[in-house]
Image (cartoon, rainbow, N blue to C red):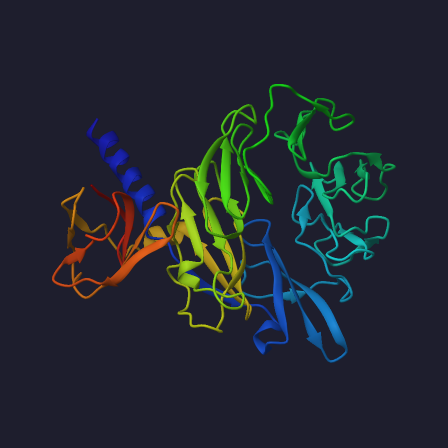
Length: 420
């Protein structure tokens, strides 16, 4: 019995470390980007080791793009055979790391597919809309659809891995996201405007289901399916969650400005904050946020990124292939990795003591060498409210409105407190 209890305590400790002490660290550098002539367009990993990135910019012969691939977790990169005239979106994998398709960024340029991990590519000139989306259940069965009102014939399918495609099928309004809970099953869902369509015959027909309701989010740009029942729908300013497969929705968060978000499982997610300041760059340490409770609260999660100043390097994209590993890339092509398993072995911080909590005016903090540490206070949406340096183990919070807040002290775990 004591052994089981100790084992349980060990698991709890590891999970705490897993969530609290991980940080980003540099693992590699994208070619071309360090010279400033090209900037990353995307970074996308299939698993912990295999990933792809595309860079675009001005070269000796004018504008060109190049796709690169890593097979060692971002440490080294090599160029694929994708034509430099192709300006594409991130890969949509077709059931494994070797098969994927690329939709175009500009109208009139073809989509591409590969069956050998980028050694060779085949152009698909008939699929040439910048509004294109792909969804593949496996290496053979897939769909092509458009998220625009401009074209009504915007649904096609394939059963041979993209070698041939069906004739376009009419669909209005535009189609934005597709999801099959079981890659081998017949049940699927499709967002069409504010309506959720459903198929029970592997996509042959799609119909409305009166039990499914639209998410209460305007101008949505991203849908994350984390399980058959738990989905997230977000825009630049708000997010909603369903826990019953689209039957009902709850608005879980409001934001200042989101550029992109991803969920690694039903509870853990990350987002990159969009530009709020001059230009298109913001502080690395304040641009990436994390939730551990299904989007209800968010906290800054930039530990490990290099220091930032106006006009310098900043985060452009990230990818989470598993719920334990993530990657991020900067304008200059630095590749960062977040490895929670490694973090468990490198615990260097701890949870600070905090009292009184709730408080009215002052927070007293306890911890090793905690005086003179920098701190920041955030609301539950991740907005910085207060910052400074701890003086004689005390923080003045008397000017904060009543409510819950998050306190982040350098080298310590983020903790929650309340003003009453």
